[in-house]
Amino acid sequence: MSASLCEFLPWDSGFFSCRIGRVKAQRLYESDLEQIGDWAQQERIDCLYLLADPGDPRTIRLAEQSGFRLVDVRLTYQHPPGVDRPAARDLPSVLLRPAQPGDIPELEALAGQLFTGTRFFFDDRFPPEAGKALYQTWIRSSVEGYADCVTVAEAEGRIAGFITAHLPAGDAGARIGLVGVASFYRGAKVGQRLVNAVLEWFHARAAGPVFVSTQAHNIPAQRLYQSCGFLAHSTGIWYHKWLTDCIPQVRKS
Image (cartoon, rainbow, N blue to C red; front, side, top):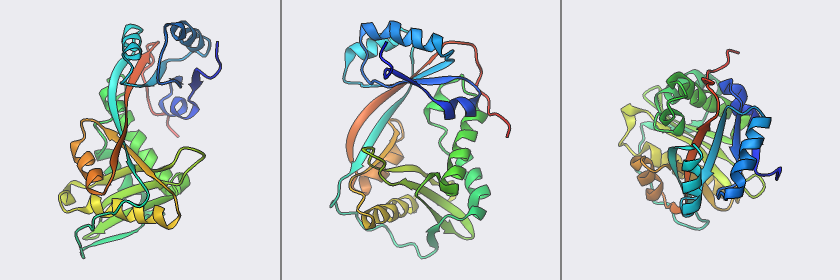
């Protein structure tokens, strides 16, 4: 079989204590299914991810017929170079600053309250505490160096929001990772200020187009990105296929 059709995901596997793989192609053919099954059996895979092209009916049919379950619809937006960014509302009570290691406990607590509409919560095989821990680990790792930039919005002595940014790696393009705003400051344009600030950070580094993804049902996030000049770029459908009875759990460090 083609060695490039699937790949083992060591980070996901270690984090969730299940062997997890991914189908690398976004379009499926009948001839792929046996090869994918053989690879998964050989690698003792518990769960397979597939990000499918929603514009290909054959792929959707084959995915569903072969046991993949829809868990998310991903929308990706692009901010092209040169597109104006509307000025965000001036909030003198909100300070934007780089995240510091001392912020990590508060950021973890906030991340644990957000992002509950993602595929790891829609797939009921993942316990809620595992999905929560994933995003807490993500923001902690971002501050510790996984992200190239982490900016926080501070208000009234508390963290009101945060945003993470990644400079281009190969052909991947610049990318916004996590964006979160605390419930006590939603509606105050904190998110817009954070997004505009990170766009300026990318612009200063000549990063080119900037990409960000969200869920199709996350209308507030879509409105935020559109208000900052982002344009729709692509759509993908996330599927998960469980091959064993493995129950994901976060491994204790």
